[in-house]
Image (cartoon, rainbow, N blue to C red; front, side, top):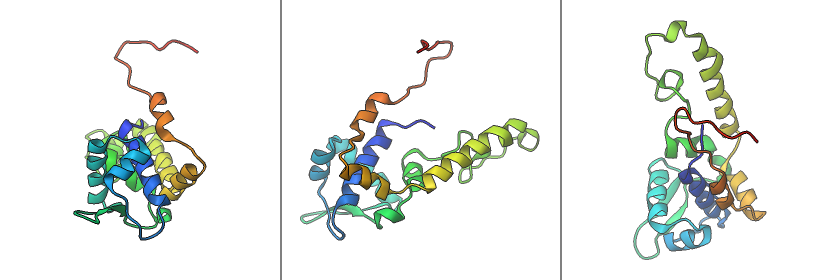
Length: 163
């Protein structure tokens, strides 16, 4: 599993919305200004989160965005699936997007590696909520710094310099 710019932007926007007093909404411009997420990107991101029931949006004057539930009730599992889709690396090990493989019943690595990785990632994401993002935001943690540390896939055959 790799984090993307979209994941980091979602964490920032959700932390901002989660820190709002209950019942308050924020306009897209306000969220973009406070988080540094470009507004066109933010609007698409919030639309994705809204379609999955994580965020609610109201159009028009007096409209804006808010969390659909309390921050403690929104697990990062739901956020990551709304943004990235499957958590599993392969469809044969996915819970929600499973696709049968002709080797599935006898593939040792599927059960020894891919399913265990999926389960470990899910356990951590299920144990973490938007409330944890809000805690970071209130302590001044800025996920913008994470953008500089995202790992990118290396081209096939390339080697990474040793530390």
